[in-house]
Each structure stands twice: as structure tokens, then as C-alpha cells.
Amino acid sequence: MKTTVILCIFMLMMSVNASDRVIYGEDDRKDIFNSPEAWQEKALSTVALMKSSTLSNAANGKLKVGGSNYGSSYNLCADEPFRNQTSAAFCSGSLIAADIIMTAGHCVRSQSSCNSTRFVFGWGYYTPNDDLTLVDALNVYSCSSLIVSEEDGSSGADYALVKLDRPVIGYQPLEIRRDGVVSSGDSLVVIGHPAGIPTKVSGGASVRSVASGYFVANLDTYGGNSGSAVFNEQTGVVEGILVRGVADFVYSNGCRKSNVCANDGCRGEEVTRVDAVLEHIPQ
Image 1 (cartoon, rainbow, N blue to C red):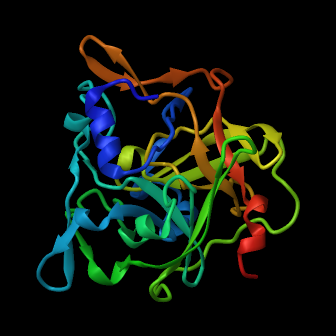
Image 2: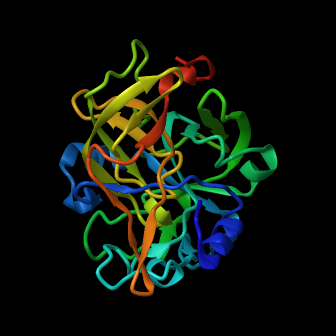
């Protein structure tokens, strides 16, 4: 659990109990422009989940993105990566059909919470100088209906599917694993919004163990990554949905630093297996 008043307030504002995350070994998070081209393309089909109140009308078909300074709102130490970026997303998601987003169940628990959520494509640094204070209104989608939302602590299930208000234009659905199950040792990549900041691609991870309905991996993820698509690095298919993990931060000299575990240390991050969701996903 988060232990600071600042973060508790932030999470209440987000209206979701996003689970904690952590860094394993080296910090593998990269902005999109620093990532391999194949993963840049997959990043196009991932989304930031933002509250409707985070976005406001601007001129020329744009929406202004609110949020807060990541470093200030989390009281980060001066050497923390990305500390000057904006934190505006409360969860992450991925496009898995023309008008369907897949995310974590604790991110969208009800039709009411779905109605107040906006699904924002393209909120990431495709060049170092991108202006992310504005997004194209055409890249922002609303919830038409909550297809399913499951959050079962006993089984490890934690997933949701959202039907958007219209088919997505300009972005391709991601390929998901339709047969078989991920294996221990498989290499992984996760794409999402750690601590709510712009899209990050993070590789250098692998599956530690596979359980019924979920698997455990050493992914570098934070709160805000909840709902992120977790990919098989070799095949490029989506293997699951990032849902739970170890505490993000530790205190050091009055500020907060990323919690760092050995690659084989701590308990690992938990990922809902995509086969747990397949019955709800159209062919």
C-alpha cells in the first residue's frame, strides 16, 4: 500500500485502487522515441485512461490535458527519471478490436466509472519535443458500454473490456494470444503509463511463474500501469494485463525514490492471463 498522504489523495482523485509496482534490476522504461520501431508501432494502439475532468476544450479541435507535475506530486528525489513530466492518466489500456479497449477490472469497475473515463490515444513522446499539454480531440474516445469488469482477489482475475463510442480510426487493434499459455522464462515487454505519465515502453523482463488465471514477471511498472498490455517480446502478441505488484517507492533523505529489487527479487508483478478474458473478446 502507498504510505504518504500525497499519494493517497492522488489515488482518491483518480477513484481507483491501482496496485503498486516496482523496478527490477535496471530501469528499462523508455519514452516511445527511444524504443525500437516495432514497439513504437504497438505503442500507437495503447491508451491512457483519464478522467473526463482532466481534459478541457481548447482551440482548433484540441483538448487540453490537466494533471500534475510528476516530481512534485510524488515528492520525488532530484535524480528520479521523468520527474518533470505530467501525471494525468489513472490507468492504461490497449485496443484489441476496432471499438474495444482491454484494461484492468479495478480501473473500470462500473458503467458509471466507465462513463466518466476518456480513452486517449497518442499521449506519448514520439519525438523529444512533442507538446503533450494538448491532444487531438479525434484521438479521444468515450465509453459506450462496459462489456465486462471482473476483479476477484481469490482467483487473480482482474480485467475489463470497454466498448467505445465509435470505431477507432488511425490505430490498429493489437494481436492477442488466442491459443496456449505463456511459459516461464518467456521474454516480455509492457507498454503503458507508469504513475500516470506519458507512454513508456519497458522490456528486459521475463515470466517467473505461471498460475491459474495469471502469471508473475519482473516488469518495471508503477501505479498507472494497471491495465497495460504485456507483450511476448518474441511473437509481439499480447499475453496479459498488468494488474498488481510491489510498492513503487521508498523514502530517502526526505524524498521518494523508486523501489528497486533484484531481477529475481521481491515477489514480482502479477499479470492477468489473456486467456482468462478470451470468452468476452470477439474473434
